[in-house]
Length: 118
Length: 114
Image (cartoon, rainbow over all chains, first blue to last red; front, side, top):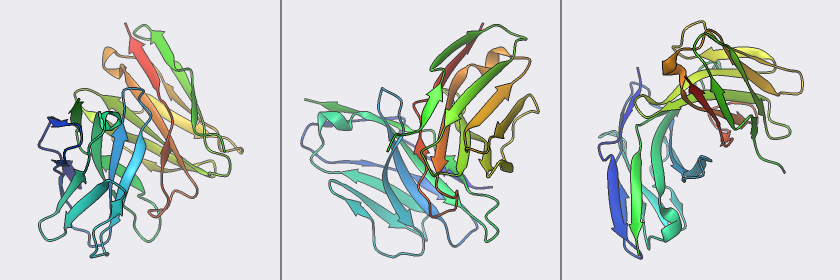
């Protein structure tokens, strides 16, 4: 079974600085997707960034970037120039779908609560 | 385009009762997934519906059920409520539910079982 592990329950960062959130996963599949979701205190889950496993290049979305190490099954999120609005729970998630489309579910890690200090 | 909506936002029930939660996906989206979020277990997949058919199911007891209507709106039902069913229930919609399609989440329904 696929599992996703986030080893940092809580992290804090100073405004304008950089922080990296860690995520490891376990899977026997070769093709899958990895995601980072943000859940602010209002509770609406928002997709931050996603990575396709077959792509070597690390995904980047503005201040958010990932370090995807497929062999190590590691998928960390780097937030540059942290802003107060980045404070939220961050979830790493994995998605695999077989060719028949019968298993398109997200498997989540337990989350990392990020605090941004002014 | 309106986002995913869930009703009601908050519910308080007592043990033994049953409850129905509703989810309206983004217009045009045909796949709806449900997740349970608790502090202890985190986010766990309940089930996914596509074109009125349950396509995937997580590891939850039969007390948890759902359905999807022809307009893609979905409901989930929990019968014989237990204290451990207290959770935030999230619904997510995607265009076709494939591995390539992004899932958009609703704000959730907070269920408290007393």
